[in-house]
Image 1 (spheres, rainbow over the protein chains, first blue to last red):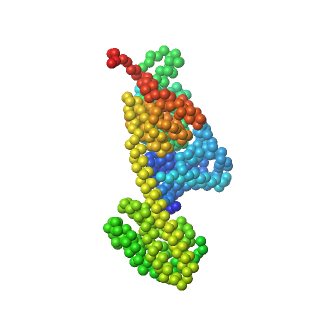
Image 2 (cartoon, helix red, strand yellow):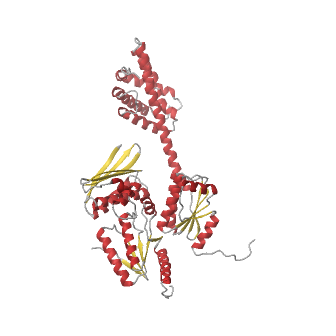
Image 3 (cartoon, helix red, strand yellow):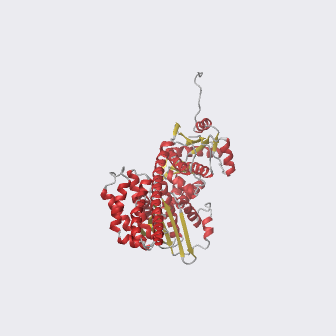
Length: 134
Length: 131
Length: 288
């Protein structure tokens, strides 16, 4: 698997979330994603960027355009040095009825992508990696 | 600071979400809406999201909050113009919009609101004629 | 397999030019029908490149495993060759013979170099034949895969053409689905239905599955998701044409249709749709 292109963006303010969405849309279009797949990726990116901002105290996102054989994909890695998530399993299964909290963004985003990885340490930070293949 | 304009459409209010919403804008919109509903005794609020190419839980919460506030002020909320890709993604995301009705466009949204208003006023035994 | 492939790297390195010449002659002789289709310079370039890559890979890599990293250059070259030959109209066998035709010149050379050592010759010949067999088969695999890609693309195009969304009346759409619904097809069809709902401003869509023999869990889930998505947009779906077997399957699968309206026939569904959109059908005069 090869990384064809990569870039890193800051997520320190509300406006940055917008910029991240725009960047993800552009990269997804360049990779030839269908409209629905673009929307799914942008929505997941928006959720995770907000999480980094609201719960992680700000962070970064790394965008990578991937090529694996003749398959192309987009990988996003969100990282923050925030408080971390004490119970990842719970965070991933929180229901949507609460309408707030980490649960909705994480568990929902997982459903929108092909690959989802999360690593988090209390007091150190969180890293979430999502990948969508064309 | 920019604010989302709120239009008066007869007995209803129309809000068109066109730009990327950030926190300050959302708060401003919610404040403006509540004061306008109260001031105009509007019976319904239409939120037009036909320009939105995505709806995440942040926007979802905003819509839910607006619907809740409106109901307290005796107005119904209808969301109109959701794009197919957005609807498909929302279903996948598991996000529903509880307490919020939807319609394909503003016109259909107003039909929905009028019917809802008639029902509500009818129940209240208000005696007002239907429109 | 023993690594008595040593001997092979030296032969390839020391006699590259001769092998190349013999091999090109062999290829030309073996496929007279196609002789005109590949220009001689192209054939020469391809053969030269392959030999050079083969020489390098045999020196560094294991002869047992052509999927290894040292063989990626060879594999890449064969992939490109297979694709281009396929496009030019060559059959998979004809393409594979590019590799197989190297056997005779190579074995001739091996026989000359190891004429005094029958055992070594036998081992080397065996190693070489296995290696070239694997490489020849690899070109066939690549060929298969690219044919599959072509078919997949054509299927996609057919999908988009084959399930039309029909307007039954102002504001009422029908989607008659016919044949088995696989995951991919259902997704494409559902997306186009939602798109038509927006384009026509139809608040009711009837999904008729009379022509669908079976429904599996994934298809049922897709149907449900479509109905939910349509609802989010402000349109209602009615599912019609659910045959008894499908009804049983749906119950067995534990799929909950919730409050989705279902009707046995498209006609019934249409009647409901008319009613819901505030219309009635009236007989104006006696029918014939």
